[in-house]
Structures are given as structure tokens and as C-alpha cells.
Image (tube, rainbow, N blue to C red):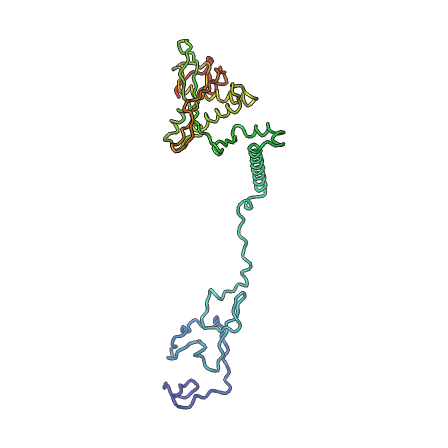
Length: 332
């Protein structure tokens, strides 16, 4: 077909008269996309007759109104927005039947059944109450003397000692500047029946040797002997007399520790039986630095306790059960 043929679709000649437009041009109704046949050519491509087909508003006949896509439920389509000939499945989605989003599933305690929720709530309440009581007891223990501590001092001490005792020497204005070594010797009955006295065993030095070079030393090696001696000193006067029930408890605690250590060190030789023990402390001052003007004595101070008989309960605290004759020293 020639480009200058007559008809409404004939191309105008440059410089010639404009193409006539029918007066009663009726716009063609917009056909929904679902009603279009599947064998239509793609948009913007030529049809089989050689003409280019396009739905863009610029290439539509002047008498045809641009098609509009119907506004979907929940979309933010403006009324004056025109359809551009392309359908975006991600933008025009019918959400009318989707409904509200489902709530997330419960987590934590809410995910448990009712009996387990009640048990968890009770356990949490017990933990909170115990923590509050413990914090209150520690506060009253370290607080200055007041009416509560005077009336309930024994109950506070029973809660604190010996596990939760507070030691403030490290934070005092003049912290502890002494080395205290706890030593012990024993009177044993040898395998041949002779009674002999052993040498002094430096238990603090043995603990220090076990800690030196150990990346993970045990709590027993670091604190057991030291805390036992501090407990004894705090509950006895200068002549080693106990001042109350805690004094007797500290003496029994220290005696069982030294009996256990003597058993490990084979005090008196193999087959020897520990009859009684004697404990002493050797305190030396830490020398001040060279730039300090402080003068301290370098003479050690020795505090020697009386001999303590070893009872059956003390022997039972050894590394093996007590025998009829007592605890025999064995290899640790």
C-alpha cells in the first residue's frame, strides 16, 4: 500500500493540507487485558501487515482516549494516573482476600503451657527473693553498727560466715603489707611405737609453689588456708582464747585442714599416726620501695598456738577413712 493512499490513516504530505478528522469519531472501548487473545503481537512490535502497533498515549489516534487500569484494593493509584501499557505483577496485586497479617508465634515463657508458666514464675520469684535477702544481709554486714545489726547480729553472721565473708584490707587506706606464713608440726606415733615430733611444715609455701606457674590454680590452693587463718585470728584474743561459738568453730576448721595437709605430706613417715598438732604463723613486713621514706622492721613475728589433740572427727577429715588406731600418714 502506498504511503499517500487515502483514508484516515494516510500520512500527511509535508506542506499539504492536514488530514481530515471525522467529526463523529467515537473512541473505542478499552478492552481488558484478560480478554485479549494470546496470539497478539508484543507491545511496540510490528503486526503481520507491516504496521507498528503500540498502546502508548503518544501513538494512539487523536480521537481515542487513553485506557486506565482499574484501581486495586489497597493501592495508592492516583485518579489521574494513566496506564502505560505495561502490567506490573508486583505493583497491582489484589489484596482484598489476603486479610490482616498473622501475629508472630509466642516466644520465651509465653510459649510454654500454663502449668510450666506457673512453675517458671514461681522459680523466678524465689530467685528474686533470695537475691534481695542476700544483698540485704551483705549490706547489713558491712554497714556501720545500727539498731538492726544490734538486734539481729547473730542471724546476719550465720548467713555471712564463712562463705560470704567480706575482706576490706585490699581497699583500706593502708592495705595489708605483710607476708603471713602458716606452719604446722605434729606429734606422731611411729610404726615402731615411738612418739616423735616432726619438723615444721610451711603450708603457705607449699600452696605458693602449687600456684606458681599454674594458669588455673584452684580456689583451695589460693584461699583455703589463708581464710582459715584469718577466721581464727578474728575470733580469738591475743592469748589464743576463743570469744564465742565462732571461735570454737574456727579452731576446729583450722585443725582439720592441717591434719589433712600432714596426711598428704606423710608426716612422721609411712605408718605414723598423728596424735596432736601445733600451728604457728610467721609474719614478715613487706619492704617499702626504694623511693619511700618509710622505715619498717625486717624481724619476723611468730605467733605460736598451743598443742591441739586430734580427735576421731579430725582424723575422718583426712584423705582416707579413719582406722581404729587413727589416721595414718599416707602419700598424697
